[in-house]
Length: 460
Image (cartoon, rainbow, N blue to C red; front, side):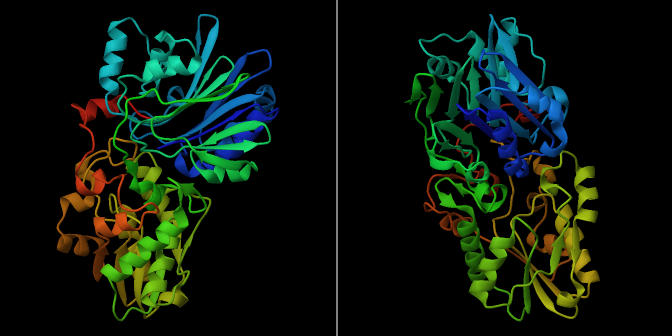
């Protein structure tokens, strides 16, 4: 999972891109980068490991001049967290340039890379995204968007792309529509982003979603749209609404906050907690769901767990050691709200269980009499091959333990998950057209023949 942001036709394109990336930081914290194209068609890149606030010196930003810019915040679902895997990618090809920022996972990346290497291609990273750059470099077409369309023929899996070919910006979304991508305007300038919250921060007006299978190009000739990719069933990622997207965004055409409140209300109906005296969230991604649970159940909502906002999202830390360390300094309970009480702790998901078990211990140490865990999604039992970091079934605690074992392992008095049907019914556009493979094990496309080799080859 990553965040992408791009601007066409604005004198401060790189500065706007940097600002937009701040709003997408929740989608990736390992590295950040910007490619800018100046008025003479020269492309420059700045990439660094770490947060957006850590990655761009004033001198670097001053050098990123021009009316075109694309940016990327990276969270690797596989592969090394290293500077050579930071994006956007910038390649020089026949006195031209190709820049690319990618959000998603290519399920046939191993095969694509092998075929390219056998044909003489040399790779400088372990990202699946680099295979797309090679394919664009070799593609032919009457227009930049036609070249990108040709390059994407035979590419499988999840992708939202921002591509710069010379002085044309091309945007593409895979036919299944797994990941979100939106377009906005600032005056005559065009802005593209993974989420609407990034358009808000730069003062852009939301125009519309980029449609599944759509390719949009913008340059001096104006804005153009084509649908040159083979159609496919829509499979939007339900986890975007459950956890990943920011609550102030509209994703897949609906408010994330409203869908999370609906998840919480469904959870209170399906998994009530009779006798509980306090409802609180595991902040921040569960706040809306906990509010929904409290509204439906009538149990008072309290801010009983405080998050240290100077610590990043534990789920998207690249290593288990990093996740363990962040949990220890990320949360602190409010004893006065918990002591002697039966409490409901609402979280959006349980992946590995490390965070949950540690939080239950914190809440009990603060004096809670009973801890009832409620989860506003179904148990995660299967790996995701479309851009979420659930890489090994053996790491997914719900896939390895029975319900009774989970209760004992987590140290809770009771544990209740939302059903898959309940989860899907809370989605803004209704239950259809969503991928829930990580919850159900039902994959909408053939899974990779060698998942471990795919992950070793990295993803964006």
